[in-house]
Length: 150
Image (tube, rainbow, N blue to C red; front, side, top):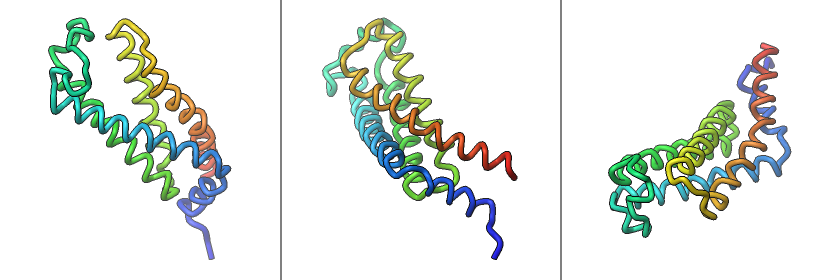
């Protein structure tokens, strides 16, 4: 019986150390919950009252939190898609994980620039993103090597 390309990639994902997949799934789940809940709270109350954040902390970059809320919801959906693809060991898990975690890394960087300060919450939500990126790298390498073999 001949193996298809997707079978080989599935095997590569399955061959990743279990601890890497557990960490990646934990980070993606954690960030999904945070992005979706935070995004919905910002979108439901664009004045920031539900999160006890005055609009002024954005230094005029946005008039309210509506657009940041929608962007955060989008990142939450992307992280949820990444979680599902990795959980199912889908061959596209590395793409979704890279996009989701890369998007959050950009989010936190821009947020710190806009707020003009580093808050302890940035560490609470941002450090897991860095950890997730570190454990995603082997998935990217594995998939890249597989694509070059084909």
